[in-house]
Length: 90
Image 1 (spheres, rainbow, N blue to C red):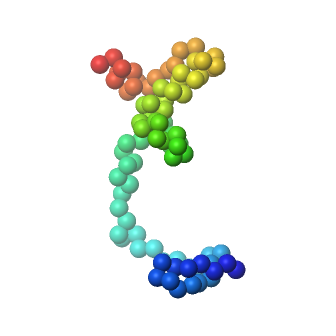
Image 2: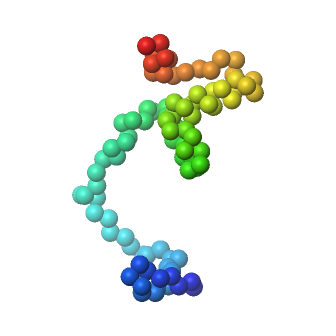
Image 3: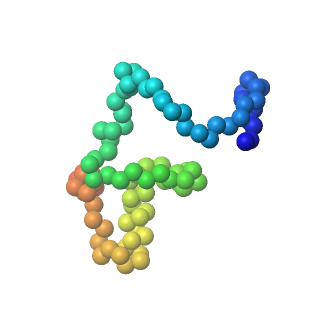
């Protein structure tokens, strides 16, 4: 097995095996503070860091993807969710 050095300088062997038992203290768990931001229809996609430097918001990603879909002919007219359509009107 490969040995690694810990930040305090001590070496140990990497453990590739799972422990037979794990104790989790769920009494200290907190609700996901980001959960309410997502709608039921939303799909979460993780951007690579180089792409994320260009697209700072989900709206900018959606706009770019809709433009691409129109350009390749996959969509006649981009469909927006009601929330986005209302935001565009106001």
